[in-house]
Image (cartoon, rainbow, N blue to C red; front, top):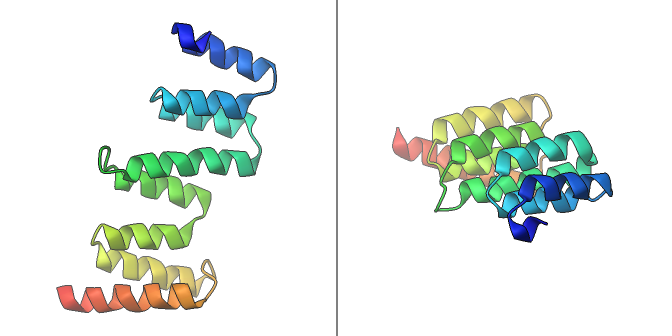
Length: 131
């Protein structure tokens, strides 16, 4: 059905037979990212929903789309705080990244590890270079 151009009907059928994850993948394949995210939130488990939303983040961060600000909101909603800091860093928003990391450390949103320590030091070093 989807192959014949009836995406909405195909998605409905997939949902009826408990294949909502497949329906989300089809929606994403056809560029219906917002609809895929909505469907994931209402029909999938938390883990499956996170997978759908992380694919959306990858799409938003791709050079063709380059909507990293929107990707940040999705990452925040997922609680992927280290990824938020890394994305802010990649966008060269060093002040914002430093403040975000500071808040995450203060409120225990980050687990302190070697990777987060390296990220924090890199953000602070870049912040000093810019100012």
